[in-house]
Image (cartoon, rainbow, N blue to C red):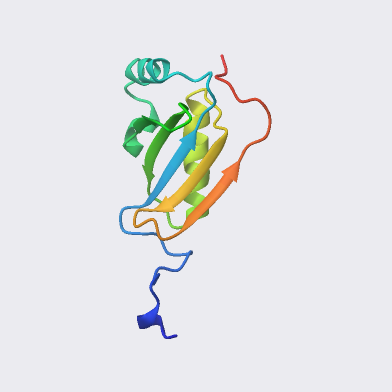
Length: 117
């Protein structure tokens, strides 16, 4: 197969044009309204730079969707994790996708994650 025949022409070392989509999942103790209130109360938080969107997955768990620029998937992942932790929340899982969703990397966290005060 030549590069022009590759259905996934993006190498894992090259970022997609719009950055990577990072989706963080939280346990049932993290409530959407609390997260929204925390973000609204801090308009200067770096999460706002990453176009945050919130949703509930089929299990009823909060998911935070971010668009993270970066030179590669690892830098984007580490940036997202640092910014999420600055918010005081610890995700139970983090998924990194390029915006075409042709590649997916899953990272799981151990322990009982909850909001830190």
